[in-house]
Picture 1 (tube, rainbow, N blue to C red):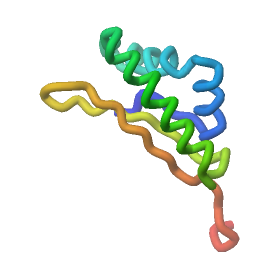
Picture 2 (picture 1 turned 180 degrees about the horizontal axis):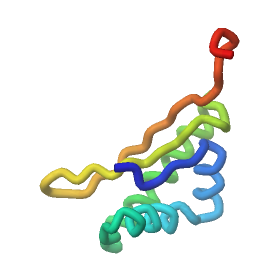
Picture 3 (picture 1 turned 60 degrees about the vertical axis):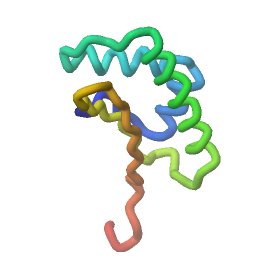
Length: 93
């Protein structure tokens, strides 16, 4: 279940503006889910900052899609980050 979608640039702006956790909380609420506890929220903030560092040093284009999916296994909530290149090649025009 996707709880966050934006471009790489939008994701990085949300990280730099310290809005990523609020955006994730909004995604939870829009899906009718309860928001995690303080430790879980801290974990999101910390791990997504590291993902931003990885994206920052990559060749992933700014218009590539970034999505965060919530997986609900039987024991813990898990967030997964996806990136998708939305640029078209010359043959896809």
